[in-house]
Each structure stands twice: as C-alpha cells, then as structure tokens.
Image (cartoon, rainbow over all chains, first blue to last red; front, side):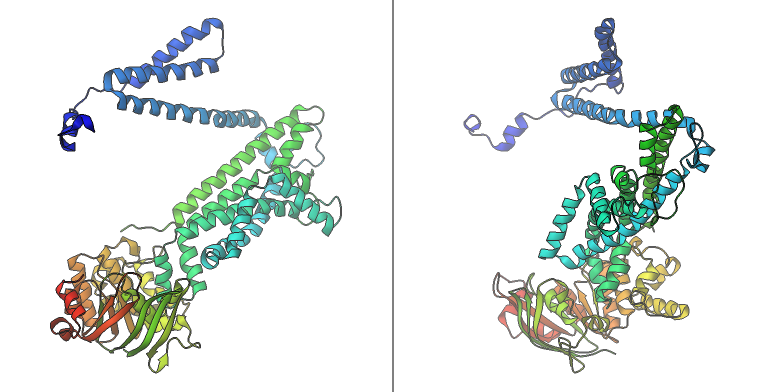
Length: 360
Length: 259
C-alpha cells in the first residue's frame, strides 16, 4: 500500500504488464524429455541389475524434474506448472492402468486354454480330471442374478419414486435415505449371513437355495438402485411436472409417463451397472447357494452353481490331477469378466437409445 | 366455451406467509385480462391459484372463493385435476416434453390421460391446435421430430398448442413472451388476439406495452413493502388504466415513476 502512494491501481497493473508473445517449447519436447529420462534412469539403475519397475519409477521422477526445469527456464513458471501437472496426471493414469491391464492379461492368458465349446456345453456332472465345463455355473449366475434383479428393481424404483416425488423433507423420507446410505456400506458377506440366518428360521438349518442367493444379492443391489434412480429423478426439471399437471394429468400418470419416461435412460443404466456389480459377488453366494456339479434351473429347489463360487472351488479344490480344475477356474473368471463387460456395454447402448433427442 | 371467473376475498399463502391478500375481481369471458405489477407482488401466484396449480408447491394454500360457472373451484368436492382440464396454462419458459415429438407434445393432454381417440380424430385435433397456435405451416413437414428441436419462439407456440388441445374454457399465461425475441413475441401476441374469440385469457406480463396492446382489462398488483402481502390495487378497462387510473400508485407505476 505505502509503496504505491500516488498511483492508481490501473497504473500499478500496467507497470507489470506482460508482453503478448512468449518463447515456447516445440511440440516434441515432452517426448524428447521422456526419452532422456529413460536413458538416465536405465544408465543409473541397470548396471546394478534392478527390475523394470524400479527403472519406470525413476524415469517418472527424472521426467517430472527435467520437464519442470527445462520449461521454467524457457517458458516461465506458469507454463512449467502446466507441464509438470500434465505429466503428473499422465503418470497417475498409467499407474491406474497397471492393475487393470495386468488382471485382464492374466485372466485372458490363463483362461484361454479352456475357453472352448466343451466349457459352454458341459456341466461337471460325472466329470473327474480333464474335460467338463461351466454351463451349470453360467446358468446359475444368470438365474440368480436375474431373480435378484426382479426383486431389486421394483423395490428400488418405487422407493426412489417415493423419496423424490412424495417424501419431500418428511421424517420418514429422511430416515429411509439414511438407512439406504447405511445399506450401501454393508459388507457382502453380512448380506449372505443375514439371508442364511433368515432361512434357518423359515425353513431349517443347512438350507441352500438359488432364491436365497438372489435375496442376498438384492440386499446389496437395492440401495444402489435407489441411489442411482433418485439422482436421475431429481434431474427431471420441475417444469415438466408442472406442464403435465397443467394439462390436467393426475400425479401418478405424470410420474409414470413424464418423469420416469424422461429419466428412463439414466435409470436403466444405473440398474444395469448395479446388476454388473452384484453378478461377481462370491461371499454371499458361498453361504446361501453353495455349489453343485449338475445344471439346476430351479432357484427354489436345491443348490446351484454360480460362476464366482465355481471358480473359487475349482481353484481351491481342483482335484487330482489339479491342472484341469485350475484351468476351468481361470476360464470361469474370464467368462464372468466378459459377462460383466457385456452388461456395461448394454448400459451404454440403453442410455444412447432412450435418452431424449434434440435433433432437428 | 369461454367462461367467466369471479374471484372474491382471495388470500394466498405459502405456509404461514401471506403472499397475496384480499383479491376481488371478475375475469370477463372472451376477453384478455392482463395482470401487471412489480416483481414479487404476487401476480404469478394469483394466476396459479386460478387453476389450482398453486397447491402443487408444498405448504401452499388458499382462502376465499374462485367461482367459475357457479362452482367454487376450492370447494372440497372439487378435483384439482379436472379443474386443470378446464383451465389451461402456458408457462414463462417453454417446456415441451423432451421425450416426445411435436405431434406427441400436442397430443400429450389426451394421451397422458389415456383417453382413447381414433387416429384420424387425433390428427385433426393436432392440426387444428397447431393451426390455432400459428405453428402448423412451420412444422407440418416434421411432426415426428422432437419438440426440443424447435426455436424458443416455436417451442412456446408449441406449448400454447398443447394447452389449447385439451379444449380448455380458460387459458392462463404466465409471462409467455419474456423468453422470446420481438418477432416471436409479435406472433404470440397476434395469437392471443385470435384466441380471445374462443377463450377467456388471463396474461401476466412485465411489459406494459404488451398489456396495452393485447388486453381488454388490466389489473395492477402492488405490495406495500418487502415481506408484506401483495394486493390488487385496481382493475379496470385497459384504456382507463393506461390513460386515467384512479389510484396514484397505478399512475406512478405505468409512467415509470415507481419507487
């Protein structure tokens, strides 16, 4: 303040005015710096005989320092910060990709051996050692997950409709929201044990049924469906509800034909992602559905095999000789990943087809 | 078809807050009634209470009488849903249904109420409503395109077509031109002039020239201060209000010497 006496803010600012042009580094600079970093890191570490991972880590550090220094000297501090942060973001992205690529690579390379027609046409009935397949487990996963979806979607959808359209700020609505939040955090094994205990009371000890697995999965699925549907319903502009009311449309019809219709793409996407999320659950199915060797289409009668449980047992108790069992476990894991990926693709397609269009 | 509405001693509340106090007015059939006044004075609130859209807001309620055809709309036996089928409404911002085509938007009033109608009757209804809203010639070749693809002015006329497709007796318009350019405004104003042959129209506007151009009678709302309820200061024929108002406040507001 005291140093600028007699000067208006405008004069102070114009005194530190910057020129409009500035030196800038050519486009290939980051790549050249990266190459230099690799060379430096390799030269320092490789004579000692260290691993590729150590070289990669040192490369990243050298690259960050080098980029910052070069850019600061040539382009000034703001550009230098920009370049360093860009490099940091890229490194974080690569770091996140490492486990993903590693998992996919491991599962594909190990599962490819038994990814054949036999696996998709055979169950494990009467199979010892080589051969056999996972047809019963594929059907089991599809049936258990489908029934879980049938239970969760109506409950979750109607809960969300209540919360957004009717509940408002009432005590009941706030209590439900709180409980749904708590349910989101329930460990999956707890859901499984809850259903197992419930059926001990209802049917008797030692009961294992497909429907039990479905109920356990729906306990995990309902809060996800409620949350995603709630968010989607909140996105529907109030103008549309009022437009429908002003046409003399009753509230329930407005909700079905305007509110749900407008948000259907988001809701369907949320549901599909929730399905994909529970399809890979192992723990609750282990305690509620168990496993079996034959194909069982009836969720109300006896045990069922499911892909995650099938993979778990095939890997932990592969039999003698062990290799065919371990191979089947990997293939089951691969099939599960493909199923979940397919569901994610379906979700994307749904959101594309159902979303409101604004073309001319 | 057009009907007279008689409002007496109407108090409108949001929860405990009295928003509009003691309104008495007669809304003439086959005429345009304009409501003017400063922001926050309760014009829109009053308009929404005429077709019971006010109570859509949680905690909102009304005391007093709104009588149409000898029937008090706030009688406890009256179903607000059927009131809204008789008294249509057009909003400030155009709000066509984004999932529906132009055709479906106009048919929405019938279809959303699950009324059965023959395809040929429906086609006729859509065409006559779009013609009524001066939109037919612009959209007749693309009725199956989304309503959101139209320009703002066309969307607003689409909303008017949608409102008149349910054949209401009264049409309420809440600043229908505030989001439109002068050309679209002119189109909507011409339309209001034609519609008043068949409907009773109540329009809220901030544009006094517009009130003077389109309306037959004008009501001036004002509020004494922040937090005080809005009141109807006076209502009279438009020419009287704009040339020789009986209240000083009206004259000040109209001549721009307000506040």
